Length: 201
Image (cartoon, rainbow, N blue to C red; front, side):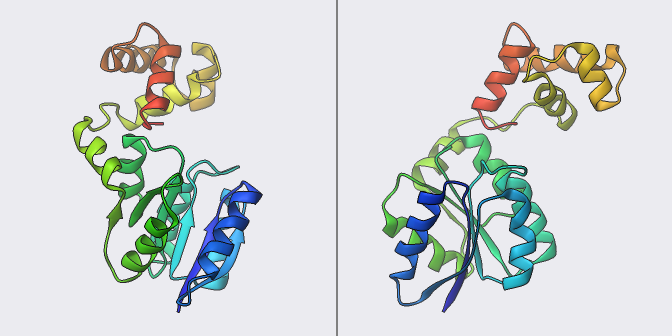
């Protein structure tokens, strides 16, 4: 029996996934959470074989949860299940230790097949997502440039960003200028929007 944890903030989607998976004779849902902060604690409590994790979760992203799960409970393999089929997300999820990436709008057979294959030790990525990810360049932004752009997303000023990240204003300007140049955009707002759209943030 393959034991599964589901991390999905939309209640209807979470319950539907649970029902569909429980119809399979070899799959058992042992835990459900709707918050990113609950993923690791619940996985440590229930010891699932597979964690089906959405990327966009309250309080903590599924990618961050996947990274911690990979470190603290390596026996639990993570499959990212998301509507945000962006190449940058695929790359970041794999770096974080995810073993699968499946789009929510695919047939349920794709999901159950991915669960079984990942449980058997394989890595599974939706074929269309894999093709797109290979076509697109790896994120050109450094970790610090990504942090500065993420801080700029809400319209924060240079001074706000500097205070938030404990950097000097001139350093923030340099990072933003570099990020704007690398993304080919005109300002920090456009750069942040493009980076978010590509899945780099």
